[in-house]
Length: 76
Image (cartoon, rainbow, N blue to C red):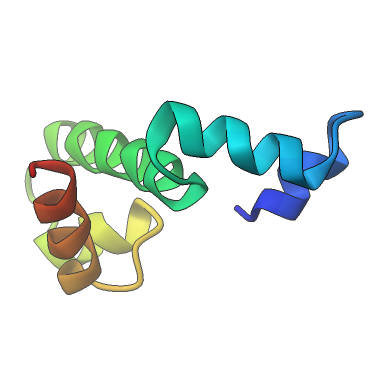
């Protein structure tokens, strides 16, 4: 998901959309990662036999390491 895709579904400017995400979530990337992290937790609960790597990939992360970095950043 990219911010330009969100903008294309609204009648708002890119700057306005970007500032809104920045004020509410710190950045658009933080918002997307929060959704991915929530999906990861749901996925693991629903698929307990899957590996951490496959859960991360199914949640939109490029790897388990990307998931781990996002989780560490959100926990600060």
